[in-house]
Structure formats: structure tokens, C-alpha cells
Amino acid sequence: MSRPSATVVLVHGAWHGAWCFAALQDALDQRGVPSYAIDLPGHGTSTAPLSDLHGDAAHVVAVLDRLAAPSVLVGHSYGGAVISHAAAGRADVGHLVYLAAFALYGGESVMGFLAGQPRAEVALSAAMRPGADGCSVLDPVAAVPALYGDCDTAAVAAAVARLSPQPMSTMTQEVHGDALVTVRSTYVRCLRDAAVHPTHQATMAARCTASIDLDCDHSPFLSRTADIADLLAATAHEVAA
Image (cartoon, rainbow, N blue to C red; front, side):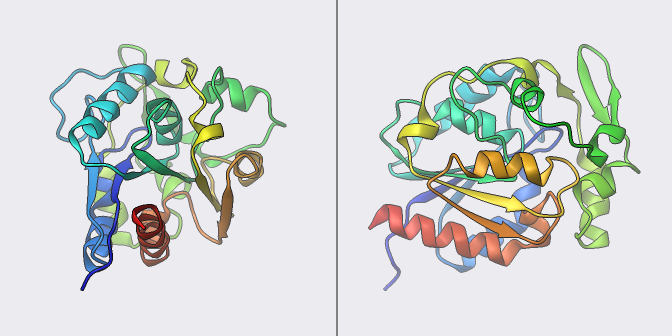
């Protein structure tokens, strides 16, 4: 008999889409854990226009409203800001998981948080290029060491081909609510991350209920899939217990 499990809801980071979680969802399926990966507006297969942080969070809220409680809400990178905003005031979110993500308090933005931290250079800065309509895009060559340093070559090629523009307004809007304070949370710090510096991750990990360190790149759902699936499965079973 399978163990009761909460539903894992996966929220991607900037420039990505739900496609980045395909391997992780397969691993969760093998562990008997249901999951949904969300395309934020304008990303992946979404036909909606690109949005800002609040619009992205509203889309996550709409998905949560359609699911049976409880859920484990997972954010990668920028997706951490999205789940911090989306989970505010929701009793159906049993746990927040931040994968090398921005675990933000109410009143903070991604850029605002970074501005308040000691300066730390990351390869992602060199990969970013200005795009149209207030968006940024990633140089496909420079994106590889910034995001996928430990990942399989074929998986990297497929990922780079899918990267899409990211509105810069998502990085400057402030999170509302106190979900990070009121909801149990786990932070996954990636020690060789070249996109969100590990020292900045350490500051945000200290805000969470628990944290673990992985010796990997910025994309542990690809480079450490089994480890992340084990963590999420254990969390989903705990929330459902």
C-alpha cells in the first residue's frame, strides 16, 4: 500500500519553463508522489503574455486553488520569490522548498535583497543580455557554465534551446505577505552555484526551518535529480501524515 503524499507543485526560475522539471517529475512518479510543474505566464507552452512577480504568483495561486490540499510548494531561483508571495495566507501549503532560490520576506525583491548583501560575482551576470520590451535574455554559450555546470551534455543542449526572455520587472517587485515566517520551509543550497552565489544562499537558508547543502551547480533538478526527488518525497509524505 502506498504512503499518503501531498502534491508537489514545481515553480521554475527565470528564463525557464515547466520543461526543466521533466526528469524530476519522472523521479517523483517512481516514488509515488504526485506533482505538477507550472509554466509561468509567457514561458514554456504558456500562451499568456509575460507578467511580473505579482502576476506570476497569481498564476500559482490559481493552480493551488484547483488542487486538493495539502501541497508542497517548490521554487527554483527566481521561483523562490514567486512561492514566497503565492503562499502568503494559505493554509493548504504545508511546506515551502527553495532550490537555490530567493527565500524572501515581505517587502523584499530579488534585486533589493541582492543590493543589501556583500557583493559576490557570479557567471550569470556575464550571460545576461538586454532584450526587447524590458526583458533580459541569456547568451546560449555563457548560460551553460552559469546554470548547468554539472549537467548531462544532452540535457544542457535541450535546456539552452528552450530558454526564453524574462521581464526585469520580476526582479524589482516586492514580495507581499509573511509565508516564509509562517510556513515550514527547507532550503537547498548549491555550493558551486554560478548564478545565485552560495554566500547569498546561506543568508536565505538561515531564514528557513531547515537547510541542506549539495555540492552541485545551479540546477539540482537536472544534476542531482535523485537527491532532490528523495527530499521532496520525504517532505510530501511528512506533510500528508
